[in-house]
Image (cartoon, rainbow over all chains, first blue to last red; front, top):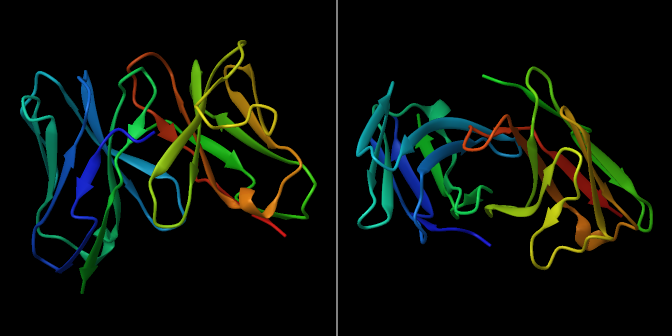
Length: 109
Length: 115
């Protein structure tokens, strides 16, 4: 079963704009991870944030975590057409990774 | 980052035949491997978790006799779809990790089409 939900389900923006995706989860966690998937391909790990962290940066990515609300957000700044992909959050409630429903991001050139 | 190789990337088979998908960790020893199934425009659904040398743990609703998983070594796990039917057509993705709590690395996926 899936662990959580993401919103929006789909997001379309212009190149250069920022994209924000949100994720909610159900159980307590040790960490939360974000992955990216290009159409018909495997997943690429983007960033891991631990439960005792509130914010983490990696290049143009910024992830926040609010364990009291059981939610996380992924911000992609200065988006590029190459950022077009599906983005998933994932947690490991029983040491097996569960994914959210994903957000399909389209960045128009 | 670590590399997970999944083969084949695409397979077409006739209904009733069996298909084997391989998942290899190329530069690390994978104590645990995972198999997921993904339908178009949907998220990944965990099918089973396999630890090297022991039987796989299947998720509820996943038929053990239908989806045979073998994790005979620390670098190789296989998923065999037995007596495939058109409804088994899907995108299957494996992942592997080196230890508990470690990052999972994913294969590129296998698109299975059953005619």
